[in-house]
Image (cartoon, rainbow, N blue to C red; front, side):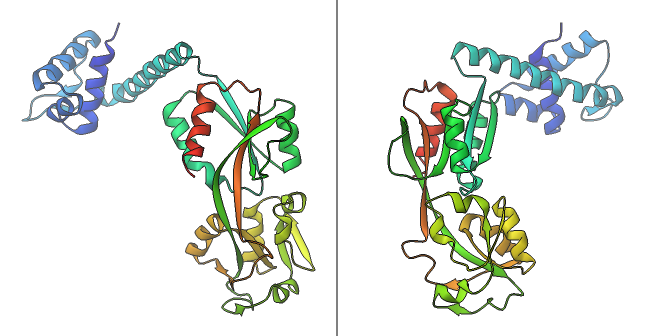
Length: 292
């Protein structure tokens, strides 16, 4: 049977370009690395490095073995991680719902941390309207949902506020609204507004539907695409708009008045009061909460 440590030092030597660098990276002496790789070669009955020069260089056999060795190390690490998950009672999977009017960008960092902490967790993200997500939560098709803040813990749910996000106006770079200082929403109301469909069903977002004529699409990416084509203007989260503004495909509208109340919305995580929060879900919720 092959020694995983020997394989690890072999891969490290290839990745870092020398036995010495592999030793430094793994806190091993040069002699230990050299001995481990020699033992691996003896076990395989193949030389993996050409040692005729001043420094060992990977030969054809070594190049063929290298990707397989990488895969074996990955599988070994995965086995260990799965075993640790069972020992710590980590759930196999998590399903979360994210309202279509809540930018996925708001939870990206939490998802990255979750993947780093629990690399074997299976994550499913449901995108839907507030009504759809409430139903998914009630029917236990999702363990938690990310929605606009309601400020109450009704429906036998608890909630954790985790972030605010700003709504901004956008238009095409070719639009006759571009570069104009718009002092009143009535000016925009006379032009076609492009909306995300879920805006119409979400009380928190309905204040941003001000156009006399509206077109609607399923998501904000679709909204932006229609705006890029100069088919209308839109009100969308700044975090979504920024990347397209940076690409130069849309402009931010110059206006200080977006709604009658505030152009800032809040997002929260909601979950059933009787939910057993196992390690991975608890970790995700805690990391989102820390973003406040």
